Image (cartoon, rainbow, N blue to C red; front, side, top):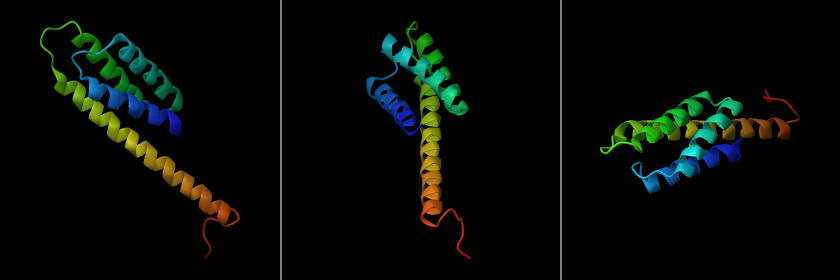
Length: 109
């Protein structure tokens, strides 16, 4: 899961570097793919945000005037969610390491 979350964060970084007004079809396809992967991983908030970003950017491609604030809100929300997922995985990894170091016991009291 760690690698998928890193990939999701890379896609967001690429999106921010390219901007929202000139999104390529390849990027849109990748956003849609990440929504599906997030769903399979049980990251439902990430799935929702990837789908909303994909939908908003798909619609923006056909407009003369672009409204980037709604997309930016979703990107920021998704980035924060992915950071929390990474923290959770780090915490769980530390707990597993601690248990292994203590012979499976959680506390030494």
